[in-house]
Image (cartoon, rainbow, N blue to C red; front, side):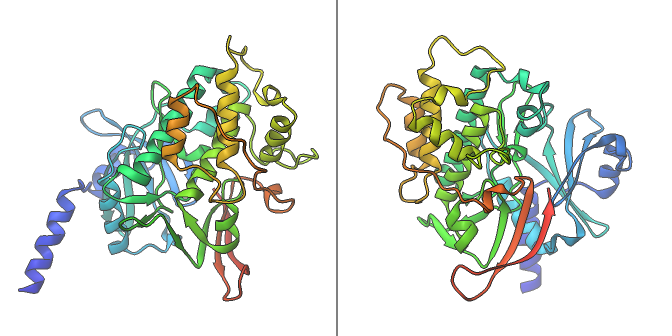
Length: 349
């Protein structure tokens, strides 16, 4: 009787998320043709595909070494499928066959933010109005995850490659492989397994495994400063500033923040909004998580453009950690001793 009930429950769960057959995925990707491959992430390759009815989709194959079991994968995909927001990439379904675990997403024609932002030619697509709209969209998506979705979710790996752009350059947060759900009114948790990307990880998470909504706020602040400057956080290898956060802070402190803005486009007639976004970015990357605003605060700062902003304290940065390539994903297991981290694996994403 229990087995029958469990089967019914599972069928009800699966009904909430469409299941694709492996055969249909093979056909849609032209047998996972190299011509269809969009890229390779830490969790596996991503392919552009087309369904029989003509709909374009993105097919993400989870690597066999991801360590995620079938039941865990099933539960995660069903939970993520419940998230519905215009600034989150929509999960359309999944495939669990042939020992494969595959996610089916809506296709984003303008790829990821890093594809445009850091390319000398493609960054011309990102005028100042577009950049502001991208920042606002990311903020709205994060606010939904932290406060308004039926699940309270901490993303834990917010970075330009995980911000996808639709045909109108609207941002959509993607890749919830590292996301964690916290229950009720919880806003923070602790882990013995630290996963994320250097350059975007908050100091309390990188050093102590403490992740919270303020960890995402820190990552958002890094994104804001990267979008405004067109430079990666760790692109300052031969510069005394060491990283973008410190460079932005020094310019702000010396009342020279306009020097941070990328000169690929002419400045708007009013630069006050640009200075305001730099200020907001610096508030988000402050060393202490209690000093950082919530995403609700950030939305308020963006919406009320004439309201005064507080003065940001010195941002979090250190000589060694931030010198590392921001494309390196860290997967660490903490030792029992405080502040001690043992690196078990590191891979390029």
